[in-house]
Length: 202
Image (cartoon, rainbow, N blue to C red; front, side, top):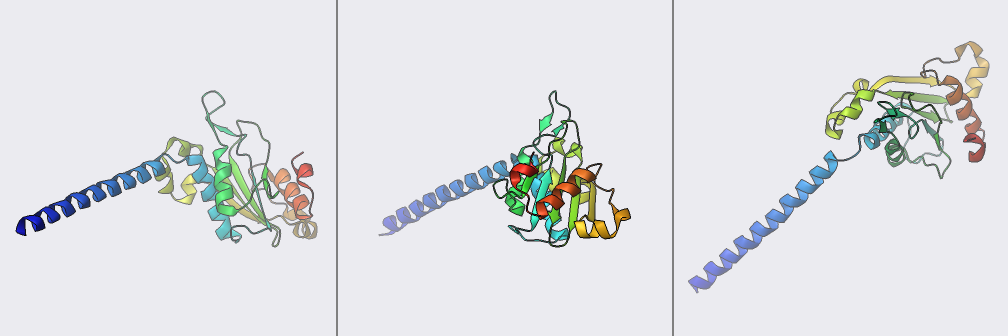
């Protein structure tokens, strides 16, 4: 009887060790996966999260328009530079804005232009604009996550760009969107009036 009990205990220990080994391996793969996640994807998410706090809005809000030059901007120059299309996935995952819904617009810019994001709330007319610090593309995702907002983005600006506000105060035309004011303001207000997606992306 004692021998059988000992054998059962030994078997239980072996099974426990095996299960623990599987658990440790799974955690290791998860950590490795996070380390290999795209910095671009995270930047799109981070920008969206800041905008959600500033405007504010919840994921999937139909009153929100996201705009970016991600997908066109190349960080570090065209030769050997890093493309930015993965930022688009981060925007969609966090904000709920999508190309299919017509509330995520990719603004064509020269490849050497700064990577930026803008989020417009048509209910309030407010817009949040963020310019990315290109140096973060040299860091791992975990390193970027540890940085404060003002180190990830060189500019975070907020202004009311609603048509009613601008018509009432013509001198209040904001100049805080890194030279993209005309595009952002006109596209946002035309979108707010229900212009079709085909017209907006033309």
